[in-house]
Image (cartoon, rainbow, N blue to C red; front, side, top):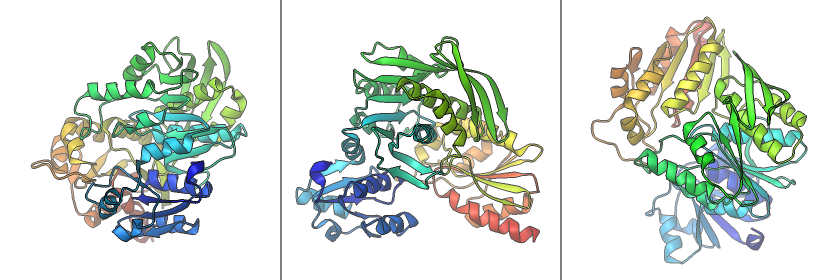
Length: 457
């Protein structure tokens, strides 16, 4: 990125979680940043305060004097700014290509996997910070400890969340990588599970021959990837016998968890987390395996993980009103929903788990209808909103109502206001309410909290 100092980079879709992170780092590197999005937001306001020039609309004149254009995958080829850049032969980079440039010169660590990327990359960042390394990071969610999704650190490490959704993570070419799990998702791009497996294998092939791959021995897809012949070092983690970093004596608590850590068969410490769920024990184990492989001290790594309070929209406590806890969570795949609701059940104790779920994308809903119904029925009651389309066109006959029809405790109420009103009226002290999904269902969490406050006032 040194060659870009003094030049202007324009970000199309700068308000997105990934794009805004890159813009933050570019600003830290002394690069002139402009950017546009379809509407104003707190993210745009924050970037403007950092020195970026931002526009809450897309127009050709926004790109007029740009030296380089970076775009998010959510931007279509017909976007007026994209069209202008192509017509004027302005260099264009994908977000992944730009992130690869930002990581150049650092000891880059890519965190990949169908589930758990954001939490694991957040955990790893906090763990490395506790070792005094001040890593750079670019994460697809807000790190609670810093309130930011990206940072240009002074240390040698760069932690990047590697999103597989469009296969572009093969651009990163990291020193080291974590693969938490491999499962079929993003069915709009990957039509079969085999296509997902293939792109992860291609991603692994980009790891430096002097580097290493951290893989989960408990997950079939990740384990098979790790077992392939690689020129770099492979390190396994999990509960499975023979894992290089093994976890056992696991205790799951309502607000956290505990486990013994063995490194190459020798006990090295006890992991204590302040975030719930068995899945987070595994996420933390991946971070420990990475940290130890990098040569960082176990006690500092454990201290950092113990201090971890979560990432934005990952089982995030939004409010507690009259004994009713309102949680927001990004889970949008049946596997993610299942582990989230298992954690919620322990968190609720004697109370009920009440969910408002918004499916994300028509293609995912169509592919996993039965799985969604089974996972969601782990809650005591579920209100289903209509599908959040993202960039997709509707698929005829596919609706969230189909999920509700397959459930025992599902209720299809597409109106946001009525859905919020329903859970506000039925909640009792001790219950847990979760707004669940990758769309805009999170906007209901503060509304629900306010409604509970009024109801019990």
